[in-house]
Image 1 (cartoon, helix red, strand yellow):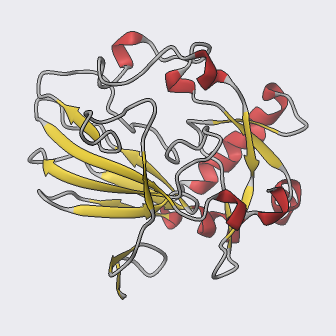
Image 2 (cartoon, rainbow, N blue to C red):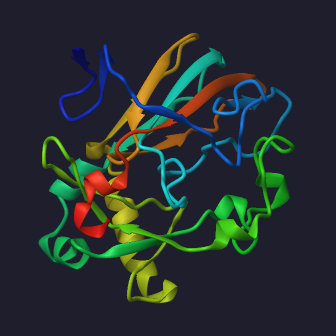
Image 3 (spheres, rainbow, N blue to C red):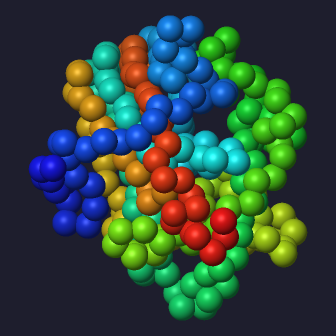
Length: 245
């Protein structure tokens, strides 16, 4: 395996790695021949939101969230359309001790807000209409996952929360959890914890869903952008939080 760091904090170009088994996104499956491959397209005339346009970790609201994702660019705008990433491990390292004590060993409820009914975004904001599954009541069902994960190889801890899917802390109501989660969301995405990928055609980026969040920037109205994404399963959350398995 060869590793070429992107920054001094996190992110690297890596070759020679077996990522795991492809995972089908139940809310944005690909064509019948390759259901695991989500087609992410925003046409030049569209003025909607963009798929992935909010800080999130891919499908963290599923019972078994994928461990990582691969994204490839087929057509990119002349400017804009970058993707931001933040390190959940760097966020944990710099977190206040009181918040660490509150979160370590606690679970967080995740729900699929964009795909359910209760928190569904307005129709005019929805991206990829017709190719994503919306209005699924099961997406509103809470799935509990550890708030803190420990890397099974390095032993490094990181947060497992994101503003798109994390709803509340276990043992607290949504209302009581809101100010705590809002503080954590802002902390995770500090510039010091982040990097920005500027896409070029035929570029491939791979990331760890258990250690990062990402955000697709929607700043290229009037230009077309087309990507392909595959998520994958590896050892799963139990390897990162064996005490919660």
